[in-house]
Amino acid sequence: MHFPIIVRSSPRALLSKYVPYTIAWVGLLFGLSISPEEWELPKGFVVGILLCILLFLMLKAFFQYLRINNTTYSIYPNQLQEHSYLFKFLGVKNSTINLREMRQIQAFSNTFLDVLFFNCGGITLTVSGDLADFQIKNIHNPGRVKGILEEICFGESKGQDSDRPEAY
Image 1 (tube, helix red, strand yellow):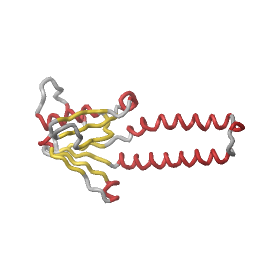
Image 2 (spheres, helix red, strand yellow):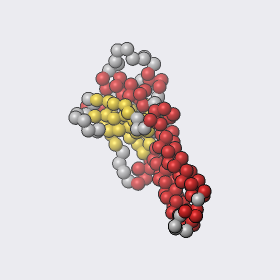
Image 3 (cartoon, rainbow, N blue to C red):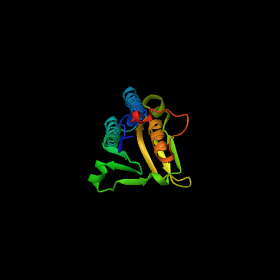
């Protein structure tokens, strides 16, 4: 393996989280346009509130897109570092974890849409106990990155593919 191994967060993970919101808001706006007489409030007031909420969700999605798009993980033989240029701009320090202390590496995905359509998820690294010490989030195909981390931390496991380093 050539170090550092650079893993970038995938903006595709955001799509699965905002598909349900988009469907719900389109349905609400469509329902509002069909029967405005049944509303006791003025139609303009309700539309204004809905547009403000939609604008807030769009700004939240844009901020998350910037955060995800500017986050990288550097895997070294003995440590894993998280770099986020957006967080660095805001004054937050980058995270580092010692891979020699790893006891458990678990891959997970947040939602069904993450797995089914976008194949995005995360990896949890724990030193001891059940609490997560470090999380690699919004990774496209987290199983491959988990395999690379297991090979670095615990050595090559039997029965695994030998071409794993090409996956990143």
